Length: 168
Image (cartoon, rainbow, N blue to C red; front, side):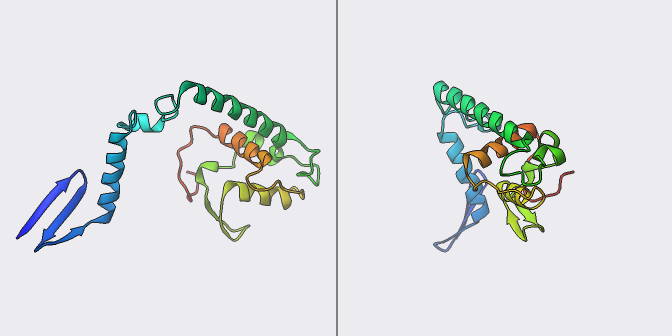
């Protein structure tokens, strides 16, 4: 006896007592279940703005926004500075990437021939600091590297995320 049971985008086939589950459909259905059980995440727009106070309390959101502004400000200072250890030849990030332009953080992680592997945006920034700028890069995940990334992302906000692809 063959029986089909559908639930959302999941298809279960029961054949003589054995069940066959189509896994990609199961993952999509699980995501739908998750968004239906978490308050405020049932709709696409709400998922995109999950930190608007529906999941996090207002105080946490405001604190996060203040701390992010501090990081963006530090990133702005580092991005434009020519007299830091990260600038061994007197160049600043801004000399090649005015206000974070032509950095395409929305495409990372992606393969970078300069590094010879799939790299994160921080790894690429470290390469750029050490090779073209002939400076000493900050450690990955450091406050300074996070600030540079925050500044670059802030300047590129609104871009469509296309991981691993070339910008259009």
